[in-house]
Each structure stands twice: as structure tokens, then as C-alpha cells.
View 1 (cartoon, rainbow, N blue to C red):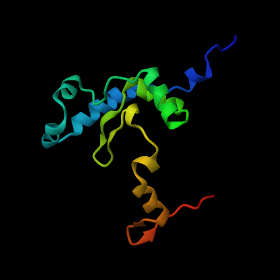
View 2 (tube, rainbow, N blue to C red):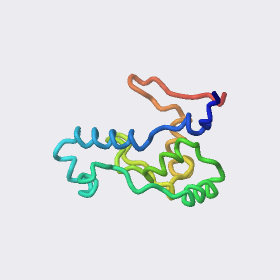
View 3 (cartoon, rainbow, N blue to C red):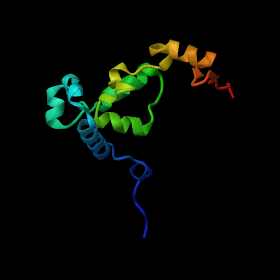
View 4 (tube, rainbow, N blue to C red):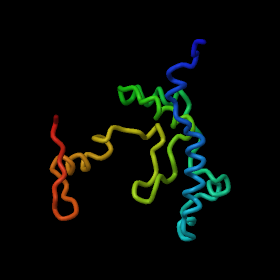
Length: 130
């Protein structure tokens, strides 16, 4: 018997199920004060995502960025074009129309990383070019 499942099918991640569960769990963990900032339609739908991006929108971003986005990320974008709030530390995820290279969006982050941030007791974080 021959397996006719394509490589893309066997390596795909079920973003839809994962994000539905994540959204539900995140909303369940929220404190009352947190709900004031959540759009009411998201609370009612129990969904912190947005309508998915089209293939044309994803292609336009790839052309603008001059690169091919990873398959899993493109799959994510077709389920939700961005995310209202990933978590309290990181906030939301950009829609594909606003995705940009880190150096364009946040050069300060790169500069801090390259200079070696200090953590905890003053230990420096740095990564060599290798």
C-alpha cells in the first residue's frame, strides 16, 4: 500500500484547533479588569484572532519583504491575520500587512542585543556571529 499523503499535509500544524483552545483558555484566565480592554465581539465569539489573511495578502507581504514566509506561519495567517493579545508580556501579533523585518520595526532591540543586555545579577547576554 502506498502512502499518498503529501509532505505538506503530514507536516502541517492544526492552527485552528490550537488557537480556539488557546483563546478559550486565555479568556478563562483573565481577571475582570482585563476584560475592559478586550473587544466585546471577541469575548462573545471566544476568539482573540481576526479573519484570516488571503493568499494574495500573504504573497504581497512576501514580495514586500523579499522573502518566502515559513509554511507554518502562512498557515497561521490563513486562520487568523494577527492576534489580539498573545500574552501580557508580548502583546498582540501583527497582521501580515504590518509584518516587517525586526531591523525595520525595532532596531533598538537589535542594538541592545548586540551590546549584550544585562540579566538578573548583571550577567551579559551576547551571541557571536558564528
